[in-house]
Structures are given as C-alpha cells and as structure tokens.
Amino acid sequence: MKEMDRKRRNKEDITPISKTREWKLLYYEHGRPGLEDSSEYRGLCRHCELCATCTLPKPEGGVWHCKYYVAVAKKISFYENVLKQLEKAEDVVHFDRDICKILAATMNEFVVHFPVKMDNGGLKVMTGYRIQHNNALGPYKGGLRFHPSVDIDEVRALATLMTWKSAITNIPFGGAKGGIQLDPADFSSDELERIARRFTFALGNNIGPEYDIPAPDVNTNPQIMAWILDTYLSTVTPNERNRCLHVVTGKPIESGGSKGRNKATGQGIVFLIDKWANDHGFNLKGATYIVQGFGNVGSWASRLMKKKGSKLIAVEDVTGTIFNSEGIDPDDLANYVKNHGGVLDYPNAKPIDHETFFSTKADIFIPAALENQITAETAQLLNVKLVAEGANSPTDLNGDIILQRKKIDVIPDILCNSGGVIVSYFEWLQNKRSEFWELDEVDNKLHKKIISAYEQVHDTAEKFKVDWRTAAQVVAISRLESVYKERGIYP
Ligand code: NAD
Image 1 (cartoon, protein in one colour):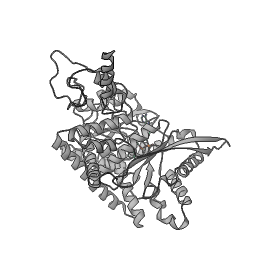
Image 2 (image 1 turned 90 degrees about the vertical axis):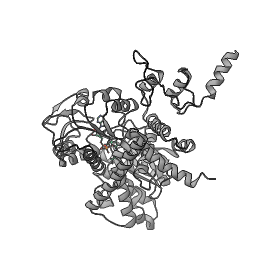
Image 3 (image 1 turned 135 degrees about the horizontal axis):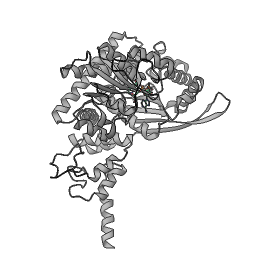
Image 4 (image 1 turned 90 degrees about the horizontal axis):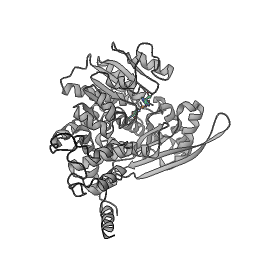
C-alpha cells in the first residue's frame, strides 16, 4: 500500500513540460534515469537515433527505439507540434520559463455560433472561431480559413504561428487566426457572402483596425475581405467609417487593398529561395521544383519561380497530382485551375500518385497546401535539396527529424511565408496614412524586410549550431522575451 502511495505521489510530483498525452506517457512509463524534469535533456531519450537532440553515441550493436520515439511516432496534433517547437527553442536558449508559459497559451478565444439563411430558404447554424494568441508586439493579426478540417486546436496553432511570424519579421503585430469549419464547395457564392458577413457581425468589437485585423487564408480571398470590411463599416458610426479601412488586409485594391498583396506570400518565398541559391552558389536557371497546393501561395510562388528560369515539373492539389519532366507552365496551369477548380485532368501533364509526387527528383519542394504533409513517411521519399515552406507547419515533428538526417535544407514556415503578413502590414499602414504605394515600392520594402529576417535566422543558426526551424523560433521568442522583460507583468 505504502509502495503504491509512493508511486502515485511521484507521478503527481512530476510536472510535464508539455501538456501532451505523449509527454505524460514518457514521464510515467519510460522509467529510465536522467529523464526527470530536472534533467538537462528534459525528458528526451539519450540513445534514440531518431531523436534530433541526441548527442551521445548509440549503443553498440544496433538501434534502440525508446518510448519517446514510439510516443512521437503516434500522430501529434498540429497544435502540439507548434508547442513542441517552442519547447525546443526554449531548450536551446534557456528563455525565461515564465515568459514561455505565457507564450504557450492563447490570450483570448472566441467561439461564435451564428445563423445563416441558405438559398433554399432553410437556415444553418454555423460555428466560427477567432483565437487571439498574443498582442505584446502590436494588434492581433492573422487570416481567416474556411475549411472542413478547421477546429479550435488548428486555429490555436495557426494563431500562435502568427505571433512568431510578426516577431521574426519585426513588424508591430501580434498573432491571431480565425476560421469556420466548412467546405466552400457546399455553398453558393451568395451563401458564402452571408456566412462571412454574419461571422463578422458575431465577432463584433472583438476585431478592429487597431485591435485585431483578419486577412485571407485557405479558401478565403480579397472578395471575402471586402464583405467583412463592408459589414464591419456598417456597424460603426458614420464619422468613423473612413478611419476603419484597415480592419482587414488582403482587400481588393479598389476597396483599399495594397498593390502586391495578392502575390506577397509567393513573392516572399521566391525572394528567400533566390537568397538561399545565392548563398549556396546554386543557379536557379534550369533548376527544377515541385509544388503542393496551387492556390494563392502555390500558384504565385510557381509563377515567380518561372521568372527565375526554373522549371515546374510536378504539382499536387486537392483534386489530383500531375507531372511533366519537360516542365509545366505555371501561368497556363493557373488559368486552367481558375476555370476547372484544380489541376485534375490538366492536358499538358500526366497524372501521378501521391507517393510518386513525393519521390520526384527535383531541386526544390514548395509545400503550399496544408499542415502535416511532410511526415516520417513522405520525408523519407523526398529527393530535393531545399524545402521552402509556403504552407503553415507543413512538416510535422517526425518529418522534420528525417529532413535533418537527410541534410535537406529547410526555410521554415514562419520565415518563408511571412511575405503575406509583411505586405498586410504595408496595406494597414497605407490605409492609416491614406496613401497608395506603387508595386515597386511594396516589393522593395518586402525584399528588405524578409531578407533581414533571413539573415537573422542564418546568424542565429550559426551562433547556436541549430537547425533553421529552431533558429527562426529563437529569433521570434527573443524579441517577445525582451518586450515582456522590459514591461514586466501587471500588476
Ligand atoms: P488556397 O485556398 O488559395 O490554396 C490551397 C491549396 O491547397 C489549393 O490548391 C488546394 O487544392 C490545396 N490543398 C488543400 N488540401 C490539400 C491536400 N490535402 N493535398 C494537396 N493539396 C491540397 O490557400 P493559400 O492561401 O494558398 O494557403 C496555402 C497555405 O499557405 C496554407 O497553409 C496557409 O495557411 C498558408 N499561408 C497563406 C498565406 C496567404 O497570404 N494566403 C500567407 C501565409 C501562409
């Protein structure tokens, strides 16, 4: 009995460094010395060859797969993955634990249920999320996603990534994200308009031009931003309306949008690939690339890579996967996708399957679809030199370990796709100042900001001898940590 009590007390004494079930499993079941909370390894197995932080020699005579690996090999959710990255950065730099506790939590979470009239006269009650992760550096900022997989955890993860992204690029925004779980294909354009408007109305003053500023993300676009803008402006007093244009970014240009915003995420990706190529003495002319996702980010990145003389040879989207060793014209494909809704049956390429797509030998892979696409299985297949992460969190924890082992360079998401939020910031500034910048000015400013972030990540990776994902995270957390330390915690 006493023995049981002791065991129970010990379990309760252990404070898991992450809330994930997997970590608890490790603490409670691993039972190896050196795995306690006080260990400098903080729970990571010292002998597992799949553990990225393992520094000790492997045991003679083979591989020892620890339970940590078994635990992480189980599907880790997108949000757990994001928190795990924070822990990894924390381990490298020993950031203030209390500040990391603040950053591991979201500040505000809104779940709104609202009625929407359908075209057939019926009514649907929809659920929308807006998660505000952090506003230490400025107003909450982040996109709105319409997708069947949207849930509160996914939005939490995306909101957290937005905080890191604003911090890494040194723009005065915090992080937020929103979404509605729906498949846009199930709704008419009129219904989508009513959904966007009722969602905006339900959020009310929980968004605002100086408080929380939405933008487009998966399956939302400038038109949807225009409906949100119009709805928001209709709810403020008439003499305030012209001062509130910056309540959303990614608007159509006529409604106050910025030149260059539509292509901004793709443009930022290509600026970074170009910088990576220069730094590595690699010629982009004639280089081959494959792209997953051919929406806003994937299609713009592809079209701008074409201008560098690179050759697109395979594309996968939700409708299908295509390949042509002679090259696929991204402009022509973008036209085709506009008219047909996806790459399926594109006449100038042949269909291939998902595994063949991931195995395609190419120089660069641009994932620009959804999270958790590069997993232990698909990372094993990849045959590229560089992964430029257009999507948010396209690589999961296990996939990342494999990419490192295969020595594939990675420009991590919070740096790589930050062009969108950078130009959103420019749009916000133009609205506040009643200015309109020419495209050259937008592109030049974007180039300067994103390359400066790249250089900081590069220097941080060198300084701490860590991978670029961890380095990017370190740059972001350092900035937030300084702000919290300077200001202190009220009261
Ligand atoms: P989008 O809706 O314009 O395009 C999404 C693309 O992904 C489509 O081609 C779709 O067919 C494809 N896709 C969806 N599910 C897929 C699957 N299971 N397999 C293969 N392809 C699939 O969205 P977007 O704005 O281009 O965003 C793409 C990614 O980039 C997302 O992760 C988003 O969060 C991120 N991102 C977007 C922006 C932006 O400015 N739009 C900025 C930063 C990051």
